[in-house]
Image 1 (cartoon, rainbow, N blue to C red):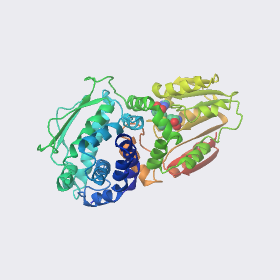
Image 2: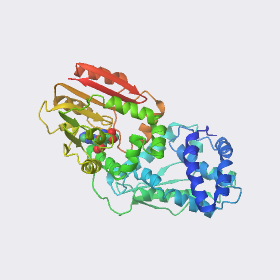
Image 3: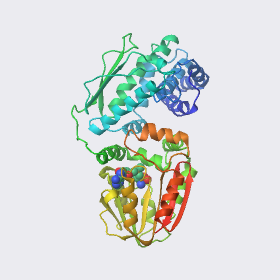
Image 4: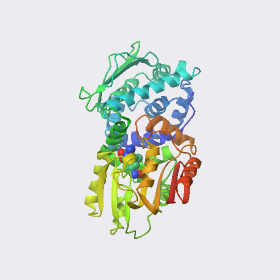
Amino acid sequence: MLVYVSRYFNIIAPLLRRIIRKRYGYELAAKAYNGARPIYRQMLADFPSIGADNPMADNAYESLVFFAMYRAAAGELTPDMLRAVVGDLFDLPVVKGAIGLSGDLNRAADMRHMNELLRSRARWADEHPDEAPYSWDFNFGDSEDDTRVCYHFTRCPLNDFCREQDLLDVLPVMCEIDHVTVRLAHGRLTREHTLAQGGAFCDYLIEGDRGTVGGEVHTREDAIKGAYKALGDSATVYDAMMTCGTPLGVAMSWVVWLIGPRENAAYLEAAMSGVPEGFSGSLLEVPVGTGVLTMPLYRTLPEAQVTCLDYSPDMMAAARERAERDGLSNVSFVQGDVGALPFDDGSFDIVMSLNGFHAFPDKEAAYAETLRVLKPGGTFCGCFYVQGEIALTDGWIRRFHEPRGFFTPPYETAASLEERLRGMYSQVHVETHKSMACFVCVK
Ligand SMILES: C[S@@+](CC[C@H](N)C(=O)[O-])C[C@H]1O[C@@H](n2cnc3c(N)ncnc32)[C@H](O)[C@@H]1O
């Protein structure tokens, strides 16, 4: 069995209902949706015991939502109709954008992340002998490099479940989702066998869709730039999550951070509270990212001289566009590394850093550099993720953000951050909102 977790149903089922309603009418949509939740619960109870914290469990939780709605429709939704619904689902910009965040498989760094992600899932099974016999058994090929990943399963709990529950007719629709998700990450999946179609195994060969590795990546910094290139390309999804600006953004923020719109606004206000109203001095923001959080603030500070720095030209392109659109002639942009800031000692009245330190690869250099470029009496403020506050968030970071290069350990705890800042600055205020620590310090 798998324990009941509501978020998968709460996010996926309403989207499916909307698509079914559009394609096949209100009645079928209502029938498939209204009856599905108890079926979903029962299916989870009947599912092989793969472990709810199994990193592969998402696949089961998600697939069962489709199966539950299919079953609730009691034969009125055929496998081909479900296939069309799934096609529409993965065509939704929000879904495409969210999957697009997993990067570009033509890039060596992103392919390596994919490989490492899959191997970490296999390691989980090795470390959990009670659940492993029910879970996917990863067998990796030996012809891998940074251009491809190749593996096969001889056991798939979804296949075992569908055989027992007489759902084999819709299982191939789930297998097809693998092709779609790989395609959205600019990859190509080649497979010749599936358990669903009676084969002895499911095989996977994943390559970039351009057939070659588009940009060799040698350093951790380049890997980060690569990760944030994908984010820059999906800036609308990223921005929505950072601001809770759309229903998907609210859902993503809640699922990962347990932070809703009100608390989101509260932590951002605390993080930016080091910038006084009407501020007219010099301010360095590092990293600026897409500028979604700070360009609205800079609109209110026409007298300030603002310098924005980021490692990723792709993230910063979105910020630049925003500043140009808003006519912010007092805001300039510099591409660079926080660990080697191209500014003289004591250049800025304020240094602000929102959501940066959990991403920076060399955190010691980042702390030292942000302190160096600040004037005596200047303010250092901002926010970033700290571990040990919310276990759910820590899990997402470890399983999702880290393997993709968005976050880089080691992380501070709230206590270690406060202690560190007290050792560097004269006045220090730290407050946490869930896993987000906000700070204002005076040099
Ligand atoms: C999560 S984003 C935060 C962006 C923005 N401050 C926000 O809150 O939306 C992290 C940013 O850190 C940048 N970054 C990572 N390592 C960096 C480094 N060594 N120097 C400068 N920027 C870096 C990434 O390019 C990315 O834009």
